[in-house]
Length: 507
Ligand code: FAD
Ligand code: SF4
Ligand code: SF4
Image (spheres, protein in one colour):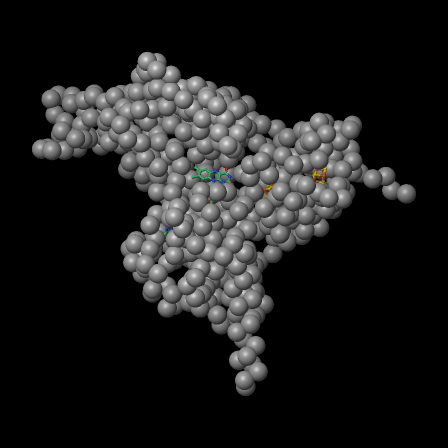
């Protein structure tokens, strides 16, 4: 009888792929984790205990068939592992890189609960599909037969692209509209390369384009084309526009130069990595080089900003967060990575405003903006203030609220100023007001401004209009957007098929 390669968790320790040294990774935007070697992937996959009720799978938003692909990897049957992995996940190599596994699959792995350290599910998932691409096992998505129906998808992030993939494979004519010059959404322009290298995203864009998905880029719906025009062109429309309205901070000098939004900062950095012409970066406005950088926020966006600033050569990088380490929303793995790279976390601190002065902008008695352009009139009064610090209140954690989370409380008379030349606000995102922006008041939104849609079919109350991803959920995760996109595509296909039947019957 063949010896089982599974259940090795008692004798084999958990090992993640090798992490590059902090000193090396501080200077580039390459991913920080290396790929598993084949033997190591098989060894780590073999730690799985093949649970009858796999909680890892239950807690994966895509319900990936994790135990099966782990067993196939352990047995060296990689191509079969790939087939099973891609059956439930449109972008397994992306989820394997950036899902917060500690909160999803791995956090619920049974052997983790029994103190043996979770199976490294994400790293194995990434390894399977990276290998499949390398080996040429990933086929074209070009359909064998074409259908006449067409679907317009507004937004080329993971939600929109996952839907495009399912629909195109079924032969539907798919057009993706995006206001950016590259598809990928936040996977392309939000998440930095050290978490997700951009050729990994572009490889998927290319696969979709090669399979016949049409991309209409540099086209903002509501500005360059109306929502009604898109509705008229297509049999169904999916709204997958994400959430981009940054939460703001008030207080003294909140509009001074040098206080920037995280999304603008990260987009500029990602564009620069592509070698694009980015005037706001080249002028110094969105660059951290040589600066004392303060990032405000404790989520994953804040972590991405601090680590980007380190790579841009900041003089110092501090992260201010009003709760403590244990109560921050960002992933502990990313905090640890940031600390290794030289980021200083200042817990229990809340900004109340900003210090600003004329700084270099008044050199020579002439007021200039950050691009060096001379300012006149009112602009001089309002624009030449350049941030020099953040006024900060110290906090402590009070009683836990109904959710069990301790609310931060102010410590009286403990204010101080944190010096800064660049302040990055990373306080989260809200939906833009689509009904107004698109001049389409009939589009129903919730009281949070997210688009109202059925949670299973993703159909909105408007006939033929679907909505997926962050614009429905609020700021969420790539893996949830993928799930929504796939489900909406399935619902649309079911509707198309249902409407074809009477047509044939009538003939
Ligand atoms: P998006 O990815 O936002 O894509 C929306 C697309 O719609 C964009 O391309 C946009 O240009 C386009 N668009 C918007 N409006 C219009 C319009 N009017 N006309 C045409 N096009 C339009 N999630 C994780 O799982 N792991 C992570 O590590 C992670 N890190 C993150 C880091 C940052 C900095 C941020 C901001 C988010 C991060 N997320 C992460 C969250 C994740 O990126 C999002 O949940 C996910 O991308 C949402 O997918 P989506 O398709 O709904 O929208
Ligand atoms: Fe885990 Fe995400 Fe992969 Fe699901 S998609 S198995 S949650 S890494
Ligand atoms: Fe394997 Fe852990 Fe999933 Fe159980 S919970 S099947 S041990 S990965």
